[in-house]
Length: 345
Ligand code: KG4
Ligand code: ZN
Image 1 (spheres, rainbow, N blue to C red):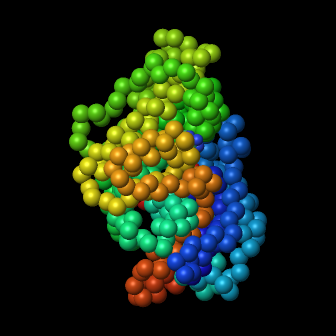
Image 2 (tube, protein in one colour; image 1 turned 45 degrees about the vertical axis):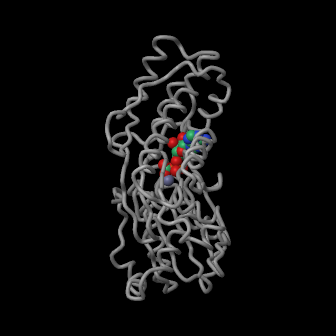
Image 3 (cartoon, helix red, strand yellow; image 1 turned 180 degrees about the vertical axis):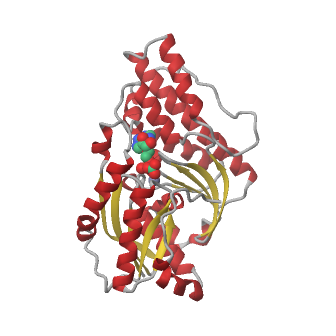
């Protein structure tokens, strides 16, 4: 089975073709056109600018992905969540292609799809998925922080989410306070590497609740006080960066540990832009080791927004759906609209 994936939820225009044959997932082609540099000068993504650039990039990206319509079995597209104007570009393009090529159209949830970057990254998982499911899934991106249990490709349960800022958003806001350009997560990690002391400790939010929810909005205020008290210059700037990274990691790890104690799972799957962070990856590895569970991480190139994850989730869902449901995908273009606030449940 071969599936084309299209992703336009924010400021990346991406297309990828993924093949599943003989228990092996192969990425046949993948293209990502990023607008990151353009938005950096505004200090964040400007929705109108993003959507216009999505329109400009869509056809060149599809052309570069070298799609052979005769060979593909279905098209998967990000339906939401994301910026409504950006999502619309991908959704309408996918609808037009579904009609022109007479191919089933599979609407995919972007947040859940982040966990599907781990599938092409870990060949043993595809061959032997029963050994790894149910899995505890942790998604940490610029827009989302969610903890869920994955039972199958069509069945999952959300157990926790952020009640305010996402982890990546908190890192980006903290990075801005340290005069780093947007998005600042990766630059903050580099600064943190230069820290030699672990003297600054930020408060631990929601530490006396039993819920699996996260809260990151207090971090920004804590840093502001810390910097006002004592300016973040020289070595102290590195120490503040390290403290921010440690604080976000501690919270993510605390909730993951709590969830692993309560729910019986066979593996841990991680996804989202923030999982490019090596300090976080190392700490997650320690938790997996303590709980004697395999940790499935995405390859670095698939931590951020990409279409490989969209094609993979679409493929897995299409491949395991009933014949009646599969038929419905052929006419899905009739009712499909972007869903900017599509929440996992
Ligand atoms: O998944 P993603 O590309 O986009 C969303 O769907 O939101 O995530 C982007 C987020 C940004 O907040 C960015 O600062 C963060 O991922 N990020 C990192 C690193 N690389 C990207 N955060 C920490 N360390 C990194 N190395
Ligand atoms: Zn994303």
